[in-house]
Amino acid sequence: MIKHVVITGGSGFIGSHLIARLLPLGFKITNIDITNPRTLTTVATSLYQHTQDLEYLPGDFRNRLVIRSALEKADAVIHLAGSYNNGAEAIQTNSYGSRFIFRELARHSHHLKKVIVASTSQVYGEGEHCCSACELSFFGTRKTSDLEQKKFDVHCPRCGSPAIGLANNEENGRAPSSVFAKSMAAVEDTASEFAFHTGVSTTILRYFNVFGSGDWRNNPGKEILADIHQNLLNKQHIILPEFGNCSRDFIHVFDAVEITLTCLLADLPELTLLNVGSGNARLVWEAAEELSDICGIRGKSLQTSAFTPGEPRSSYAETSQLKKLLGFKPRTNFRQGLEELTRYSGIMVDAA
Image (tube, rainbow, N blue to C red; front, side, top):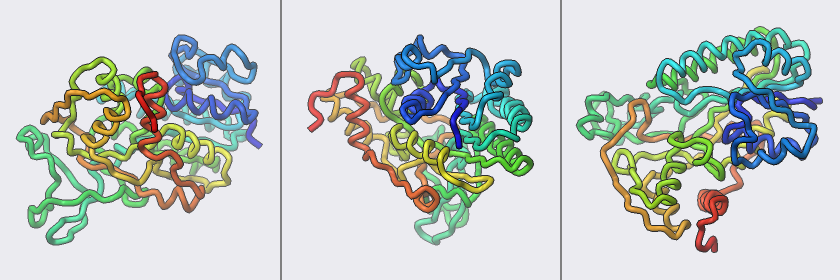
């Protein structure tokens, strides 16, 4: 039975919501993070003052003394910590850092019952596509030179026709195209090796676009809905990349946390790979319009030709594995999630 959970990165967006969900269930939790949660405004901040079942260990998860002291009493580990940076920091923290922490986990594998590892949908790259004309299926690619010329769509390599983005399936392979995505693919590979050699039940969760209360406060610049929300609050222009016509799979943090919790409690195979998404693709400009409507603030949208190399044109999850292994489907629809996000900031005019 799992009683004590070590969470790396527990001061972050998903981590703080996860801690707030786990504590009432009777778990003892150790949060390893370089950021003191008491200095933040999160759903878990006040919990550190009112319970002895929640411990904060300051430090980097790559610090041997910190991680070893935490693992001595752990039944399970949820590894959320990492770098969103798209350069050398991602390689150092994610690629190399994962090898360090999994070596330490292997030292304690005799008493660990479960390991859960956070990954990202970006390991799919552009993902699988189907040609609208010749019906060829292929993994999409986009050249930076084409993006600079405002050619954002993915085209068929055989006939050149526009292609349709398909749902990303866990079994269809990866095609990471950014430094960050490649560093997270390395994390997945290390986790897979750990599971194979130790036999500890290990679950890799590929989070899609997780949003919700606290997001823009803890993760500025990391998530497009958070940026749109903050710009609405500040009455600034809303900048929509690729003319707002790129699509994303938005899943509310309550659902992402519930999936993570279910994986912690479920009897899963030695190695499990799961998408954490809603299974729905939503155009960014449509998401911005709905958020503006709920906030009661009409933002000035700038549908620009800006782009981020490595970011996909279309990205959404195939969720059949979630339903098959966990019996789970998202419970918070997109509008409900946006209403929860705006209630947290106290600016929603009317949720009805």
